[in-house]
Image (cartoon, rainbow, N blue to C red; front, side, top):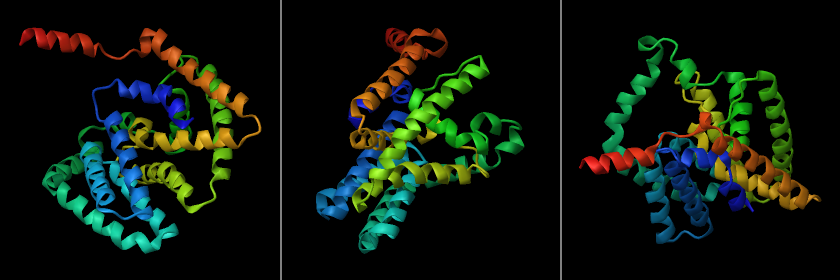
Length: 271
């Protein structure tokens, strides 16, 4: 159910068609969480290597992937302390493999910290205000990267979508009881909170930069549907809202992506 909803997610589809790191980062984040979960269930060499390689690929792909590793660490601290030492051994190897990139990271980090000095006002483009970021993130997760010229219409649709998706998400949260399923909550919530806190210093809390938590969002929505008395109604409603968001993207040229296929053919023809 979560896989189906994820496959028609307007937000996911939009950024899967962008030649940047977002879809790739989401894949490696999912793989990291998969091997992380398998590792503390059964600590084998296969799971050990799978976690290290997928997590290393994640932070090479997207710096915010570090937030996922922090979320995993905090999850163990609250729920599985007996696995903290094996986990830290894995993190040691991840950092070791990432060290060649560290000098470039420092250069980019300094640029992010000093952005207000050399590009005044750029922070407002790179980041979302503190009070808007969390509701905007969940609205974009639910309905896609869609905007409306009419602010009243935008507000109405945002409230409608957030109310419905929020209620199903709440039902999903309520079903989480065992230690293993709590991992999904840590995956979804902690990276968002960490990004909000760090954004006071470095502007980075845009919804698309947190797309690697989107699979956890849909798992919780699926849990909410599955545990509800009105499974078919909730499933159909979420599907309709997602397809409506998709239709706005596909049918309105305002939201279309750049012609990457045309650009590829042009470059190939020039070779």
